Length: 522
Image 1 (cartoon, one colour):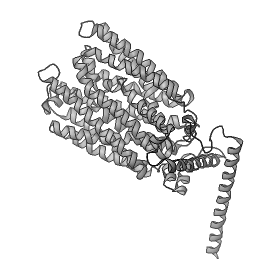
Image 2 (tube, one colour):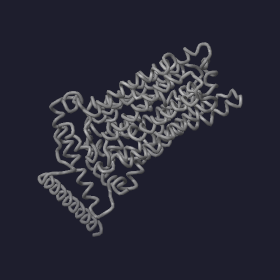
Image 3 (cartoon, helix red, strand yellow):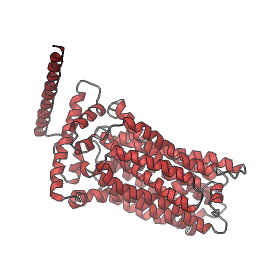
Image 4 (cartoon, helix red, strand yellow):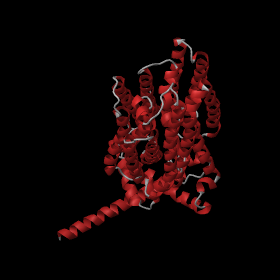
């Protein structure tokens, strides 16, 4: 575990900030259990499935999801500015505050209009957190542990999905007793504030991102943070951290020289950055068109159409998201060994197979009394989550966070997350209507984009495993100021010189302190 966890403080920082990841996934998926509670429909005056007026209800449920994603998209754009201007940490804290407010308004909604506004506000909080958290995690991790550390984002996302599903499942039985209480849908919506409150409390002792501190010319603070975060066992722990710090400084200086020649829109100005922007946007946009959010948010309704009754749709939905936890843990331990490209290509290939079989089975058995065929269709929905959670869920955030250089990382993350939310708005707004109107044929709409996305990843996405964030520039055809891995003799000489100068500086500082102490005693 030494390579994966350089020290306990680094792990605690990454896990603490990932409380926001749990808040995000809980907030994104809570609507799935909400629409499974009969009292939700009664309290907001909505027709239930199979009754007159359900067409309006399905449109509104799509709007509830769409407005939530719209708020998140706005937040992603906002973070492109705020994460640079005020830092990754302050933006995370702001996102947590907004999500707490949104959760309270959602839980207290008394009509459709109020619920729509509340969902937008909650969506803004989710968007801010999910955009900045993996970026922060990538910037505080060591090159060797970055895959493991950023995968904690995926692991905690899985925990959020689990909490949402199981809390919703338990609350269902209150309604099942005949109670008309609004608690079964209001409490789960209110609970999305809990992880954000814990994040706010723990953020008091979280450090600023060392790369952001360097960008703000706060070099001494950045150096101190790096030494604390990247301290490893052994006599040379400070030497390794100092080597990383020297590369960060050198690359930032080179990036500033490039930025001075291309202006403020450098994320689109140079060919390497345009490629990064394309890769980031299509990664997140394409992943949505696998249909993952359709199953996550409308799984309860999907299982109902496949013959599952009473509490079974909610139970299956809860089990489905629970299975995402071991998959994300698998990613954390093996993505640095196997590689990002292999993970993404395997995940998309497996999902494509699952979608093809799902489409065929639904075409044959949907609306029939063939229980065996319908259960087979449910199996392929579960095969989908195996490939998604094990190979794509955490991988997408890790890859997006690491392909952009420090000075445009916040803009790059925003571009990628806008891609995610544009895709989710299209699918979540149209998806429920499509499932209701064209049923199994909707899965045909998912197969073709998934196949094209596999080709996109295969031909255009470079491998980034076992490279420092600064080394990754070379994968996009840009110059690296000094390599962390596979450094040349000349670069090793630069490191040696920098280390020697730092050592002399430390001894000079120590001698100065000792002289002051002697003078004070005299």
